[in-house]
Length: 144
Image 1 (tube, rainbow, N blue to C red):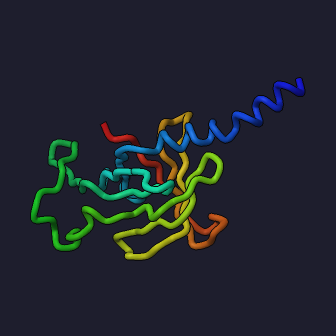
Image 2 (cartoon, rainbow, N blue to C red):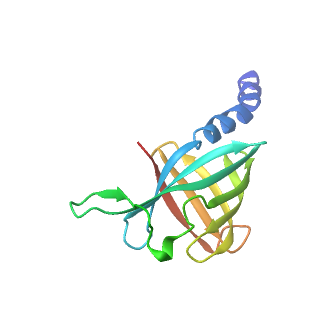
């Protein structure tokens, strides 16, 4: 039993890294109030830190689906594509922690990102405090 426990403890850092590697790639974001798809964010790793950049914005297409917003974007959305919204998050166990940027409010928040293996979604929590008590969580879905 003791050997098994030691074995599990030795694997723990690698299990966390495996979960973190699952956040890489493109994810669709959704509006908290309406549930509508808003954007796609590409999450990438650079120098041991993780970043997320808005690569597409979406609008309803009139047929119950979504289409990529075309140029010129509505004035309110100019400059959002290309904006980095996950700002150098660092791995802490099986989560990424650091700062998040909200282009709508133009404010930075404390944040943490984790991959939910049960749902296959990315849990992105932004908060006013470091502990995450005063904030909200969005659930991002992997883009196809």
